[in-house]
View 1 (tube, helix red, strand yellow):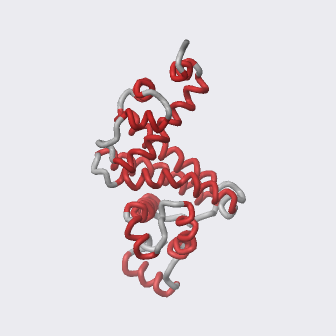
View 2 (cartoon, one colour):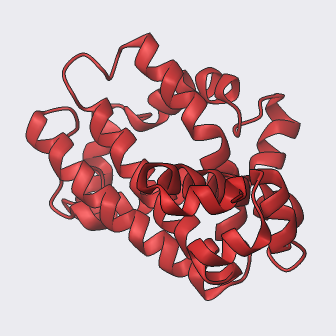
View 3 (cartoon, helix red, strand yellow):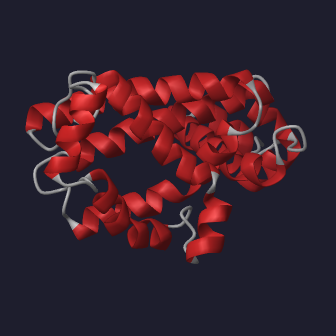
Length: 218
């Protein structure tokens, strides 16, 4: 009689579910324990599968980490694009679902960007590419303003937003808000909108544009 793990391998639909369970277990385990300290056996236990099945699906721990990176990028793009659909940007139900989705992804992202691995740069660059495409869609829909240098603006915006997750402990210490939770994101959103909607009056913006060039304050 075959084991549950062996049966899983033979079913395409179950196979995908097993991959997702393993990936999600790694998304939780890597930031908590660190990449070096995390074992395939520990991830397998979290996912309820055998260590051999982890190797079967991903080849190695590095392969699993790469899959986690790809998943974070894909979910980032999927969620951002969904938010641009009619009615979703201000829909509380959509926002609540997005906040729930964001929790493990933000924790993984925060860990990934500071782990000192070359993959951190690759992950940032891939997120930026996706973010730039999403921003272009947002500009076309009239949700955000255009820019003479959209790539630079998006790069800075991305660095600022991701920096908030990297420095989440310092934000929490000074505000009492954990930015890596759904509740924390919800509480910080009004302040983030205040920042990104513009802190300066038109006179100040005109002076900045004149001093630094036309692309400085779009």
